[in-house]
Amino acid sequence: MDPVVLFAAGWAAAMFGAYRMGREPRRLSSGFFVLAAVALTIAGAGAAIARLAEPSALVSAAVLLGALFLVAVIAAGLGLLTNGITVIRREGMRPTTVTPVLVGFGLLVLPVAATLALRRGPAVPHWLMLVAATATLVGLYLVAHLLAFAGHATVYGKLPDETGADAIVVLGCGLHRNRVTPLLAARLNRALQVYRAETAIGLMPLVITSGGKGSDEAVSEADAMAAYLVRAGVADTSIVRERFSRNTDENLRNSLDALRRRHPDSTGPRITVVTSNFHVLRAAAATRRIGVDAHVVGARTALYFLPAAFLREFAAVLTTHYRRTHVAVAAATVVALTAAAADAYFAV
Image 1 (cartoon, rainbow, N blue to C red):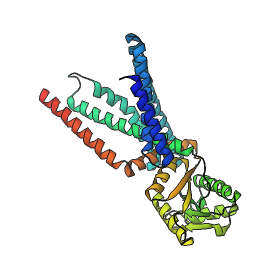
Image 2: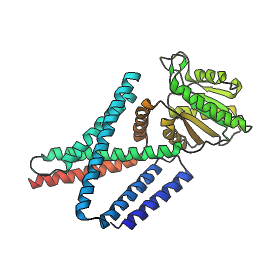
Image 3: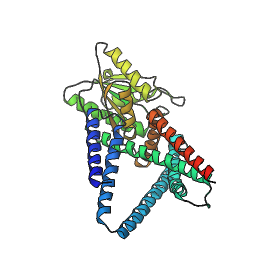
Image 4: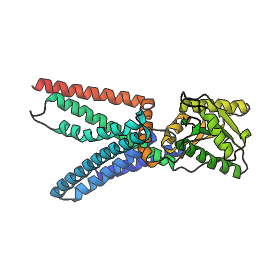
């Protein structure tokens, strides 16, 4: 394809993605326009080089790029496997900590599946090629979603803090008995930064600590968080304790209800949500889904825990968003594989 066309399409995708991000940065699908812009630009550069280079040089470059991609995939897989083992040793065996191991294993299997899917000849059974093709398509589909989500999350996380909120909602994430964990303490310290920035310009937002009481916890997360903030200098009268939430959606909905009970005359309250950096984009998408004007900020997370936590967020987004996309892609894949299987059957 003409490099100019590819570059123009990449520029158009970038501009449209930037426009969507400017109008509504919480829209998850914007990440795909960023990914498309990068992919089209790379394709345009490749097409331009292909027009100028000698055929033998192109073959060598293609082999080199393929080898580098393979090494990158294998390195990422091994890195995630190693990280998963580290997280499991430190945090115990849980769905979150096992995720890097599963994804790392999948990345190691992906090149093998792709190789089998591209092979030809009687040495490879048709059923194995179909399985390999299915695994390759699913793997590429998930990798594309992961890249789009990661790129969007990175951009959203770099947005500057905003002031003028009616309330600051701090999302809970579990206690150790009745004590705040390091992960939750990081959120509370980030909330203190936001609160002090608001009070520095003369505003007095409510601080809503949101989180219920788990079966292994002595107090509710909301009470433990409130006590932490009071010790840090926040007036107890400025804190609202929301003690009944069990997940992010309930955190947000119950916090809004508490805010409206406190200020029944308020219409369209604006909130700042404080969570961990790996959770920012999913929380932002949740605020958009329930129709609240919100800005979400994230607290830093220990580096070793970040891959596991981010992959868990990605898995959660896959199950709660993109459902129509999943159905459309699954239907197209089934049709393509059925056609391939029929062709292979009648060719025998």
